[in-house]
Image (cartoon, rainbow, N blue to C red; front, top):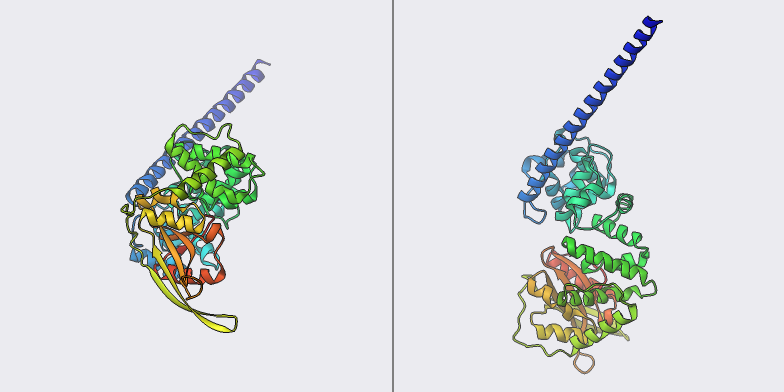
Amino acid sequence: MGAVVSKKNKEEGSSRARYAALQKARKEAQAREAEARALREAAIANALRRSPARASTRLPGAIESVIARKAPRLIDPRYGRALERLFALPGLRSLETWKPRGKSAETLFRSLAEHRLAKFPTPAIVWNAFHDDAADKLVGLAAHVAGGGSLYEFVKTRFEVPLTRKMCHDLLATPAEYKLLDAVRRAQIRAAGGSARLFETWRGTHHGRHVGTENEEVFWASVIAWFAAAAMLDPREVPTLCDYIAHRRREDASFSMKGRSALAMLRGMREWHQALTNEKVVSSKLFPMSGLSSGTFEDFRRESGETVKQIWRIREVLTAKALAEEGRRMGHCVYSYAWRIERGDTSIWSVQMEDGRGETGNWHMVTLEVRNDLKRLVQARGRFNRAMTPHETRIVTRWAAENRLAFALGAW
């Protein structure tokens, strides 16, 4: 009997020893994995510091020649910056071993990104970081998730936008037709109970299109929650309300949305708008020039059985007085953008059409906003915030093409 017990004890001891050895080996493997991930993320962070997303770089010729041979559709100006951002990061695998998958350029790019950075299958929305206007804030996130890291853990320590675990899960499930920053905003609005209309409006605002500091993002998350709770508010009021809220916060850093009623905010916004309209502006106050070119276009239209010649002119607004007059004439809050123009982030352009009719024969048609740093036309609105007509769109598209501006129109 004693021998049997002794044998059983030995077997149990041997089993415990094997289990302890397995646990030790597992912990050592996890430690090595964690160390390798930390080293890789440090290398990614260093690469991003050396080659920020907005820097002007060029894809090395050797890399370009391999891509041209394997996936010629990617040798396209639309993918140039995305490829530069991708190859600025340390890769897991050699480009030579890449076997392209898919036919479209977008599918091929995702295939290349997965080959270079992914340890595990990665949601397609993540790869949109390399095309995003806010790529400098998002590429590190994409590399972290592709390398097997937790999105939530990254957000907690290295991302300005506050997201819960549920919001992170929702973000990664976003359809790939959205930009990655749009997916972030969509997750925020869905978590707050906001509507699809609110999301479509918010993604076109200045605050929806840019990632601010951590404090700014916390504040604007509270604004999103406020808009979501004010369900009866017309979404068309959102952009102008955002300008008013930004104005209030610039005046008072402690300004918050707590206890604010929609009616009171709308009333305050309209009073502020009226004050901007009536403001006496010193004509000598000049804005910095953007460096973009003005445009003059000749066009002909058939009206009432006759051909009417039209001269379209697109001119930069370069004084505070002209900016105030543009807002007064067009019935919108463009003067609230003065601080962005002074910083050089934004330039405002006036679209006018001359046809010899009416009292003056000259008509102010559309106001444009251009993001100078991104070379993007981001806003275009007619009088009282109406959208451009197809005819106006054709004229503005010609001017944008001459200045090599991308079209990314949202709500004013």
